[in-house]
Picture 1 (cartoon, rainbow, N blue to C red):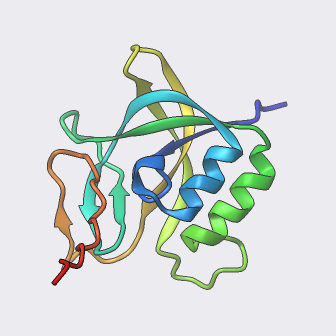
Picture 2 (cartoon, rainbow, N blue to C red):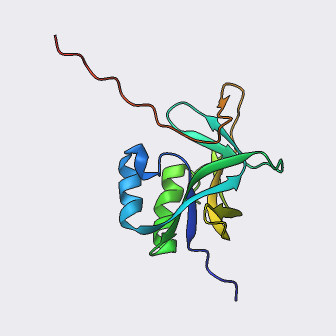
Length: 142
């Protein structure tokens, strides 16, 4: 029997630093294993990023690996959030796949990652491989 993959590599709005409500939900259902990288190129898609698989050694996406407390249940709602669920119509923007990731400690493991499948014509590549969410502008007091 194949082992259950209970780790998820996150690099965008699911990171706690994004402040997104879904990141808070994920944090309550997982434990952070640490900062990590995965092979890929990262693109700014507007209000969220998208990682695309890459075989080029220099192409790395930076994020975190979390260990899911209840993988099947958590992945079901994340699939729906990412538009990658069984009920989502094709073409789906994201696809959840298993990929090798490397923790900053040097440990390698396999984790789920959501790779972007959509068009990149208007997307800007984030060459650093790091996503920094846009912060809302503060209204100045008059």
